Image (cartoon, rainbow, N blue to C red; front, side):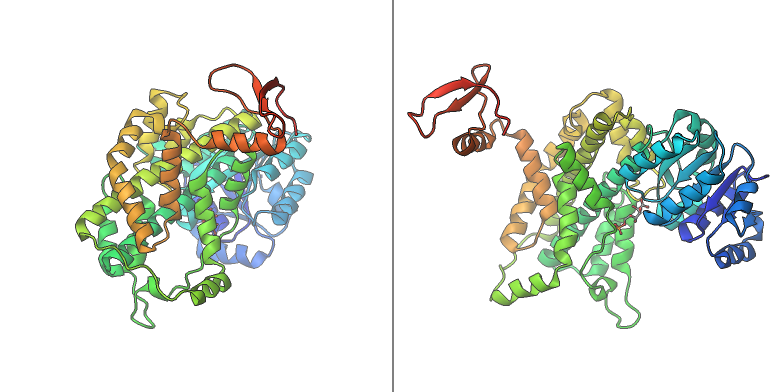
Length: 480
Ligand code: 6PG
């Protein structure tokens, strides 16, 4: 074979990635799609790519130079398993199978185990940036072995986005580490989007600004601390006018948000790890709430009046929201990085947090200058227990704190839902509180289930004889 890299799956992500690969010096790209029509169409539309096209999997495998490297870009799940086994049957030890879809990292761990038993490398790889990123430069999060990365790394670096001169790709860790980090990226993406949506809702409802006016607010916010792709596209969406009705586009879209599952995975995994990611969870649940129109209309039918919105000074309030958005965003990213740290520990990955923040600076959906602050935080001290401990973030949150509290209380008084802002602030206040009511919960647990507690002033484990004379005994930790 002559192709140094192959791509299986010519839907939009796969064909864009193949074109991206073909456009880089030194690459000859083999392509294959289950139904050949797609391949033929791509060949006709992009002769400049010099693709080596195959209409059978045997021909595709034969078109690859050894060691063979193929990137699978098909729907996550059963489709991916089918292609993997077709390739694995034909590949030889030392060859590399890459899964570039949004796979669940548990699947990736399982697949890597199966495939590596045959001496074939399996590299689960997160790829972020949507269609545009796949074509012009995504952020790439590969797992798998260091050995596979030696071959694959330079190829991926050639197509990745570039941030401050560095390609947005790094070897995240072994087996499922890449897909794990991509999952957390998506969880953070959900949280960031929800926070921006809440900022919009508050401004729209309380300051009564039109979507077109708010587009200008978001455009102005897209410089400085909040500068990011998501803020930029928010302004674009708010600017859009529906051609059919002449109304703002945002007003003609059904307000029920979809989800394909990666946000939910982030939260499910956080629950397993015992990592509080309330900001991400609220963002996932906010989409779920929106998508229960039957409950929404049933509750609305019981309500005769809604709170009058609090009167605010428009400019001051907008500044407050901007500060609240930034503080809440810091919390969401801190929670996401906590999950990465906990996952790395649980699954035995050596993940460089600063390197993750670096490759998210360009190409991916959460790309932003802001990620540089996270890079710096981990450079200053790789062992911080929370990003909120880093001096820059601590002072950023502290300087926005009053505004944050005003926004959350104004939202509550005005009846504007702010699950993202509210949960972020409560999380911050939980960490900031000297004493938490967890002490009372421990008392309740000990009362009804003899679950035991520790004391603030003495080593050991204790139980109070609640149904006896209420004296305290030293005991063993409860196991039930
Ligand atoms: C990306 C995106 C991409 C996709 C997500 C979110 O990084 O390029 O995250 O992977 O948009 O899967 O999709 P849902 O909002 O439909 O869950």
